[in-house]
Structure formats: structure tokens, C-alpha cells
Length: 486
Image (cartoon, rainbow, N blue to C red; front, side):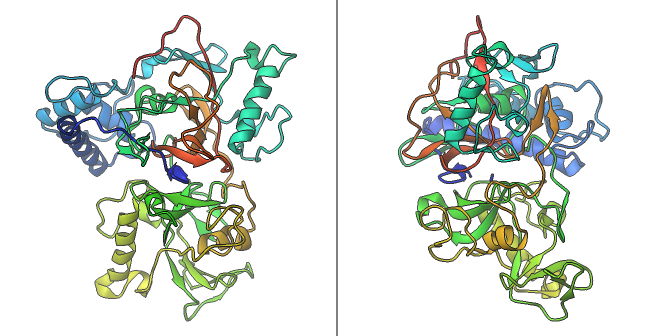
């Protein structure tokens, strides 16, 4: 989840200030881009949608950058003031109002060149060659233990797995290369929009890291785009469960870490800073009147199947695990995929309770965000952090009622193709500390017990506890290619 920034899960790393005047200019330019994105959404373009209806490639890029897709959009493009489009383009090309470059250029997919066999992808901008399979570990473990069936793993296992790749084929290395490595992230990155307590860069727009460059520049994605479409699979009696991070209403023990979050991509409970985009699963404490047992004796439901009573946690859940993707109750700040920051999540639940003229959504006015509660002895780490946290509402649902285990994802791994890459997961990927993409990972991460991560689910760069389970993409330095200066 989203995990992510993470000072424990998706938003926990930190960003450097670039000066008051430059920041004011960037914010104005960002506003122009956001205006274009909002117009594209209103016109019906969808993040990760089908060809012709894609928010970024079929609407945003043609308007902001003049980059027309090979096939024209199937929806009419919205009309945008040319001055707004120009301001956005300047922002994306790294120019402030005074013409100073403050960001590297973005949305240049021509920097990715797939090998004829489709197994590797040369990144001419970074001067590295990526492995095209963004989740190779799900099918090829190289005899390394500790890898989940989804392909995710903790950081130490990721390091061992990469070492095993380099030792494969009697030392020749996987695909004939023995210098595969994790993607690096620099300790100073002026492109990020947030800064942590020790001055570390994190948040959105971090395009100086290897994964950030891939997401924002080469693939042309923009926060809060997911690299792949929303999940719509049925999970038990639930629908639309996302294999990502979900908000709780409980504050983290450390206020700087935001709010407790739970990952339905791995079963890890951590924390995320409040300006991160996670999903929401509303609940009501206790059992509602008129509920009856479903064909699955573990659940009770109303006549429509819209709500589900979980007797193990004494909680009534909304059956749609991503209602916000289709029903926003007038909250404009909810992303099209249903994700939102924590403040918006609170207002979303309030709007549910005020819906239908005050009768509440589905006739109930006591919807709430799930709670975590006090320190949990069932958690694998201190306090309310780690795997196995069955005392929290979401943890009880994941482990006790859905019967999942540590490292499990609520749905099977994605097999999505994104540009020249395959098996891309809309989740968090490990990165490592490194000042240059072509240099090996540093021995120490950004903080004790933490390493870098990047979300292909929404573009958030943060840090994560090394014991968490994330996915792995790798590359090797390409001879003769120079890495750009951030």
C-alpha cells in the first residue's frame, strides 16, 4: 500500500525544498496540469483505461505536450485554454516562470527500447537495461527462499534474489549478465514534493530516482495514475477489492507517520503520511437488523448483498471494497480510481452518512473508517506494525475472516503489460539508496531499518521497513550510456 511513503508503508520518505519563489511557480504550473487532468476526467477519460480512453496517453499528453497517440481518442478531447496548456507544458519540461529548469522533462516513451526477444528494455535516458518482466520472482526464485507466491519479498530477500540472478548459469548470470541490481534512489532529489524530518526527499513527482524516472518520464504517467487498471475481482462476498493499501481512522504512534494503514497486497499493517492516496472500506460496528446467513456460513448479509456482517470482528462491512470509484457523494478530491488522501477519506465517510437527505447511504448514518486500537501483541513488529495484526478491524478481516496469510495478496498477481514491460504490479517496489543509477546500492538505507520504495500504483516514493514485502524490478548498467544529472 499506496507502505508507500511510508514512514511505514507508502509515504515515509522525504523531500528537499527548492526555494520559495521556485516552489510558488511550480505550484502554479502544477495547477495548470491539474486543470487539464480534471477536464480529461470530466470528459470520460480513465486512468489505465482502454486504448482511446486513457487519461494520460489519449487526453493529457495530446493537450499538454502535443504528443498524439498512434490511434486517435475515442472520446472528444476537452477544450483547454492555450495559455493553460502552455503553462502545464513548461512545468512538465522543467521550466519555471523565469525559464529556469527545475524538473527534468517528462513523458518521453521513446527512451525505452525493447530487445528483439522482449526480455529486456534499454532505457536510453538512464543508461540502464531493465528486465522486461516486472515480477520475475513470481515464476523464477533462483532457489531463494522467502519469496511469496505473488512474487513479493522483504528487502533482505530481494538482495539475495538479485545476487542469485547474478550467480545463475554457472556464474554467467541471468540472460548472460551478472551485474543486475535494484533500482537506486538518491538522498537528494529536488523534484519531490515533500521533505522528511531529516531532509530526505519523498512524495510525488520524484523523477530523479530510477523508478521515478521510469514512471514519470519514460512511461509518461502522472500522480495518481496506476500503471494498470483497477481490480474488479470478487473476493469471497466482496467486490472490487484492491491489492493495495487501505486507510484506518487511527493515528500512528508517531504523529509524523500519519495514520495507520493496512495492505491487502501483503497483509502488512503500517502507517502512511496523510497526503498519500489509499483506498477506503467503510464499516459499521456491530450487526445490523434484518441480516441473514449467506451460503457461506462465515457471513451474514442484507437482502441486496450490499453489506456483510463479520461475526469474528463483530463488524458490518460495505460489500463494495472500492465504492468511491463509482460513488463519490460529491467529494471532488477523490481520484478516479477511488483512492484518496486521509482527510478526503474522513469527508467521504461523512458524506455517506449525510446521503439521501440525511438518511445515510443504504439507510445507515453510522458509517466509519476501520479502527486499529492500542498496541497489538499479535503484530510481528512493535506496536501496531507488521504482519499478523489480527486485533485491528482490517487485520481481522484479512487474516481471520478471509483466511489469508502473511505475504498473501487479496487477488492473484497481475499479468498486465505496460509499454514494453510485462507483469507490472500496481503496488510498491523496492529501491535502494544510491546517488547514481549506474552505481551499486549503498550498504545503508535512508534510515535505520528502512529502505526506499516506489509505488507503481500511484507514483509515490517513500521508505519502507525492510521487513515489509514489496515487489522487485531490476536492471543492469548499459555500457556506453551516460546517466542524466538530476
